Image (tube, rainbow over all chains, first blue to last red; front, top):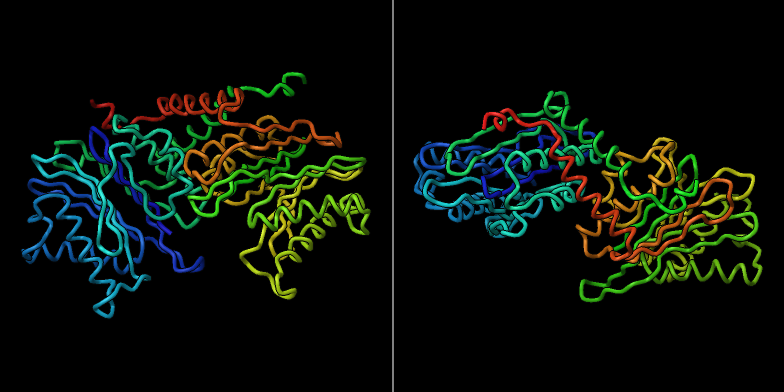
Length: 241
Length: 241
């Protein structure tokens, strides 16, 4: 399994991915599921779930197309819609093993976030068949993969006006909860924070369970939840005791 | 969809179920998914997910078998393993429309909790094919149905030594999170608390969103989480600002 989150806040973009892959519980490995490209007038961050071969092919093709100055590449796309269209086509073409229809086992999903100078920051989700959607103003985040365990905390806290720091912390808590409940999601966690109009990646971290910041965040959160529980309203039958 | 939780703590049993059923998003209704029987030397609480016809048939059969003093009924089972075996057989027989093999569309799951006087409290999960397991000492809760959204908070907080009040509150928070993320789980929430060795149900509540206790719990939890976030460790790049 995989877990990825992308967020578009008023102040910028937060993108997070885990690194665990598995072909069965007895075949677990670690691969990076994040691609970053911050050159010239644009910063682009992509995270992916689905078929690893397709995802890796897409990331490799994006690099090769830049290196060979192909007529469509990340530098030449005019906006993030064109980037999403391009990523979708590269992904779809790789998943059509017979050249005609998609082999559903080979499908991959992508979240693309970032900004091109002079344009607004963007966050999009690309589906295995190559189409895509933009993030909603009302619910400014997307998830991929093992989405359910970590969704309630995002639903409760993530709004457009949430600060980048709070959004990144919330994403890490969401990952912490997911990793506690599902062994097929695992570290290192790749975290990127992009501040609006900076056109460069502000923070790029690879967090392990033992990384002091993550371990501190995780234990403070658990402890805080336990304390919070003590403050919740009591049942009448408890007061009688 | 459905969401049910059963917990076996050192101090007793907590059982919770939602009431929403749906046959497609355009066909939503409300049915009770909890059965309670507290007579003589025993208190038994059952919650269910799966095919509504099968679940209702099982609950009705349990009542009829007591009324007609059938050779196997809830009063005559010697222990909770026999009760689980009995419930499993009634469920399985109803799901075998051809009399031989189970129609998987008709399968239902059951959590059975409670106590028979002179025995330890028990919590068991019965599968559609009629077999069952007992709750683990290490992880003393079961879930049915839409389990993922509400599982992280249970994983973090529920231990054998958790008080019945904390366990019931934690279950309600788990339901609150699930109902915020999945519209196919909905109120009223049936909540039963059983105190060890009381052989009677200590608390039985039907909670709506507007029920003051539940609404108070829900808003205090949301507010507490937001405050807790403010206390979490800051990133270095935030401190620089």
